Length: 179
Image 1 (spheres, rainbow, N blue to C red):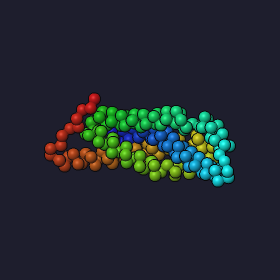
Image 2: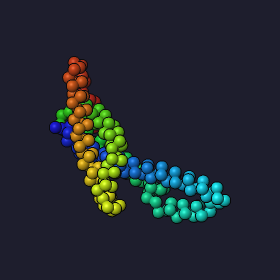
Image 3: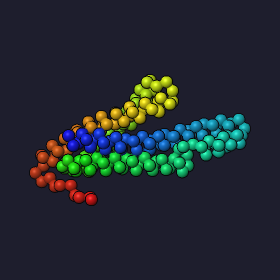
Image 4: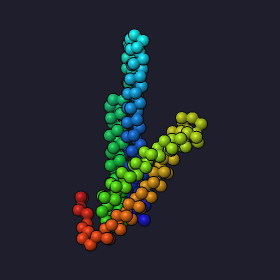
């Protein structure tokens, strides 16, 4: 039960940071692709002064450009780290052996699952919404509920497999204390 709680709460926090950092990175990639395409078209037509003006205007207002994007990325990474700490604290509080190992392996596995399901969550939110406003309200709910479910299942499986492995070894040593 401790592993399920660690997965629900730890992964919900981690997933929030994961989605923020991922959105920034996706924004950077799309911005670079769009900029490259527009610049190429503009240069093939004989000049890029209007494009420079447009990107200067858009660059100042874009949420993922410059310092705003770096700040959001750092916030996302910090929230991801906080999710790992929440997981570890819950696991240690419940007496789970090798709490860091369970946390880090579960987090990596759940992040891969989240990345694979991200577009499915977006498609479901799009199907349930009538516009961008509703989508922005529905998507976090779907992603949050899914993160809790994925976290519970993955943490339980990893903790169960880790406990079985520890019990199989006669010379299992406890995890070193990190604070």
